Each structure stands twice: as structure tokens, then as C-alpha cells.
Length: 242
Image (cartoon, rainbow, N blue to C red; front, top):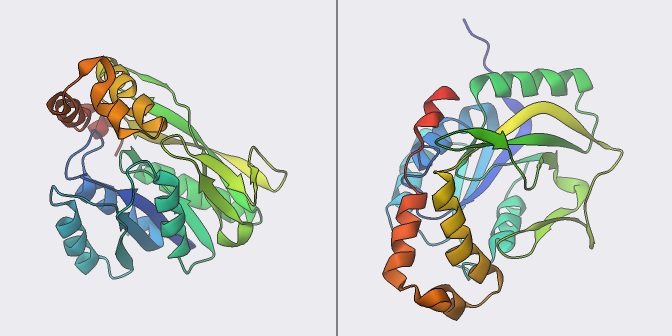
């Protein structure tokens, strides 16, 4: 019988909104591919309207250690939502993923063995990031500090592009953090859609002004919604990383 791998005293924390489907397979795939490997889960829904919130309730019935919370915030405030999720964890460690990110079964097994060898002695662990497009894979960028002690005073700050903070200072790296040879797989649509969303959605959002979001280059709200739908299309590369 295959040994069951569970990261001990670790809570899987995430924020979601309208994730019935996304490039990584959607909310059901997200929970089913992650919760079996964590002792607990704290998922924060920030105002879904596509059935994600209702589906989370069903999943909480399946995973008794999964708790669902609501937080209706300004759409810019990703950091506040992640901090709220972290605050709901009652475990020693926090494991952070976004809804379009995954680890494979092999990744979780390797992570468990690496941390066991380390005797869980470090305050936190840094991962690699792999962007998985429809057409190719590429070294990703972004926050790679994904597993850390809740007591380590780690928090997020910022809007769309959050900054990882330790206390009041931006956190870069510390001696009591180490890297693990595991890549978080970030599933994305084709590159052109990524460029359009950055130009017409993320950059205006980062400025903190919804007027910019709908007025830049006279883009109509329906165009924004169309881009958002394209951004959510399933990336078939997901099937290669189970």
C-alpha cells in the first residue's frame, strides 16, 4: 500500500475568486490535488459569483480539516486577503499556493522527505517557480517563499504585486531559510493573453484606480470580461503535471 504523505502541522492557505475553471483545472482540482497532503486548510473566497463559493462548501464536506472563509475586499487587496487566510491557520506552518498553481504527487513526496531529512529545523523554505504556458515552459518569477512557520512574522504587503514582508521590512532571504529542489507549477494561458491581461487589467489595477481599468485605450468593460474569460481557459499542459 502506498504510504500516505501529509505535511505535519501544516495549513494550506489560499485566496480564490471565480475559480470554477482556470488554466490549472479550477477549484475542485485545486483542492483535491493539495488538501490530501496538508493537515489543514484555510481558503478565503473574496467574492466569487461563478459558483466557486458553493463548490468550496461541498469540498469542505469532503475534507473535514478544510475551513472556508469570506472576505469581500477591494479587488486590489490580494495581500490583505492572504494575511487574513494566514491568520485563520492554527498550525505551526503555513503552505501558500495560488489557485492556478500546483505541486504534483511526486513533488509532495519529495518535499516531505526533504523536510524530514532537515528535521523541519528551518524557519521557512524557498521553492522554484515554473511557468507552464500552452506552448512552452519557462522559469517563473514571483514570490517563492511558500512554506514557513506561522510564528515567523511573515506577512504580505501591496496590491496586485504583493511584497513578502518579515515584520516591517521587505523579506529577501535569511540564513534560517533554505531552498528545496521543487518547482511550483504556475499554469498560464498562451503568452498573448498574458500580455493583454497585464496591459489592460494588472497594470491599471496596480495603480489602484478602477477608472484606469476601463478607460485605458478606450477598452470597454465587456472587453475586460472577455479577456478575463480567456485567462481562465484550461491549459491542457496540466495533464502532464499530476
